[in-house]
Length: 350
Image 1 (cartoon, rainbow, N blue to C red):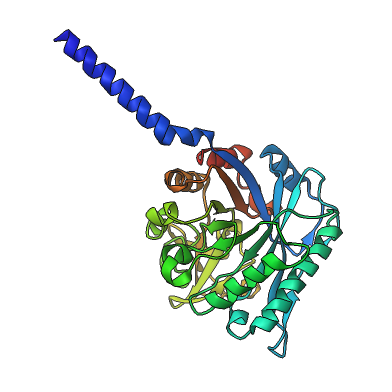
Image 2: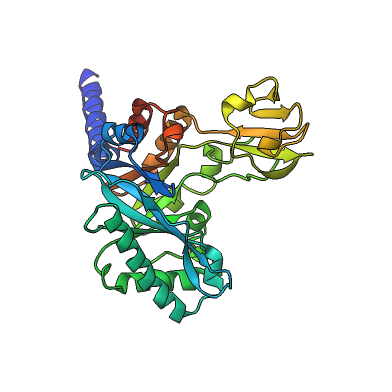
């Protein structure tokens, strides 16, 4: 009897070790790079932002260079709200330029216009990289919420970017929305080297209620799982570090009240706490664009929510190297998270 028990114990031990070596335990060798997006229009030196980069050993900064939209005539794509530099980037930080393409322009541009746009993007990006004090860059990221109707033109633009002198041979990454990940047949697979999955802005912002439209795991589960595992290129993860106040009048969405902070909502002279994350204006508040009895839903992302998200996502990712990119590097935003909060979240992807 003892001999049989020993044999069973030995068998189970070997089975567990074999399973560990062949699958999940290998994930501990995964390389995790922690980075930030910089989404402001002016870059200048900030001690708080520099401290977060240093403590998290961030060696890259994904910097929005510009949006691309049509000019006033609606006929020529132009740069919109480009970034300006009041200081040089630190030598220790690599710059990854990011260009946001407004989806609607892809509905009306010709291939000839897209050829010109690809060349103009690379030329403009190179100029901004030099203004930042960098000799060059090693990756370009394109951000676009493309749809099935704009897929052909968007993918054509990406293919042309690969061919532009000054970018040829350098990797291109593209952002990936949840609906694009789930609907791979309709959305297609962009011709790029890596995808950055945006794990935020996933719920119905305009719907009245107590939900969190920035990040909810229940929403993530509707899109991910096997869709993430089967995606045919390495995937990086974008996680949100922001909050906002969503305003409603008579239960109808009226916009995001950008000037409202959580402290403002807890000012009892201005707002009444209703329940959970809902507040009601006690009086007209013209500075916030609110009237008496307008309601505000406060949405934010807690450290525990970030970590629960990382725990859920990690098993579905097959890449050996994952860039975890927080959105975004801003004094007021990042100070609500400790270094340990963000380090622990990134570590959960190993």
